[in-house]
Amino acid sequence: MRLLLCGGTGFIGKALTLALLSRGDEVWIVTRKKPLKPPFDPALPHPQYVTWAEWLSNPILLGEFDGIINLTGESINQRWTAKAKERIQSSRTKAADSIAEAVRAMDKPPGVVINASGISLYGHSGERIFDENSPARPADFLGETVVKWEAAADRIPVGRLVKLRIGLVCAREDGAFPLIALPYKMFMGGRIGNGKQGLPWIHLQDMVALILFCLDTPSISGPVNSVAPEPVSNDEFGRMLGRVMKRPHWFPVPSFLLRTALGEMSTLVVTGQKAMPLKLIEHGFRFAFPKLEEALIDVSSK
Image 1 (cartoon, helix red, strand yellow):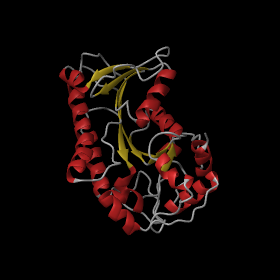
Image 2 (cartoon, one colour):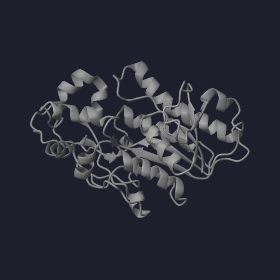
Image 3 (cartoon, helix red, strand yellow):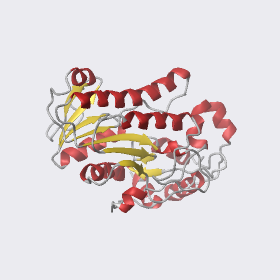
Image 4 (cartoon, helix red, strand yellow):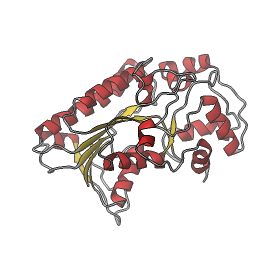
């Protein structure tokens, strides 16, 4: 396939790029600034780079694409000041709007657009488990941002649109997991708040695999819960992490302390969702790491 990847230099994007190249796809990465030297082994197949300005000035310049994957978005791991919230939200909606503008200018639009989204649009859950049929009930800034993000993606004029509702992506060296594991390494791990809030998770290998699966499966469209099929609470996740790392799970962190330290960004950890990847299961996707223990053993190993 010939693919355009927006956000290909990020955490998921880099892993996805390697997977696409390894199976023989041609990859063009849209980025704000081209790298001075390729971030991948120059002896291996490598992607081509184009800046947003270059691509949007002439969307037909690069020819036709079989698909576009959009993973673009400002990091949410920062204090949510008014300016930061504007950057977080606008980086997502503007990227989708720009893709819509470019697709309208193409002689032949791509067969599929896969756009990142977030699991937080469902709102907060206790024991409820959300699937793709559950309504959007945003309960905080991030949930409201995801609703606007998906609305912008819906304006892309393409025959098949997939919206990946992503949770915590677990990997050994990148993303949020090393930060979550750090207190356990210091023998200070424990639940956050009451620990009952959902913590939707997925192994990076499965995250990449499901994107490829969505690319290759014409019957998949609309929202796709990009989480593992074992919903757990924050406390259950922490207990399993402590067991795998052979560290205690004993030091609870009160919600009010996190709200004091992190401000509004504390909603990332003091609230949460339990969700099931119903659409992926119905279409026969096989997870390499369906169980939390297996995933944590893999990402915790050296």
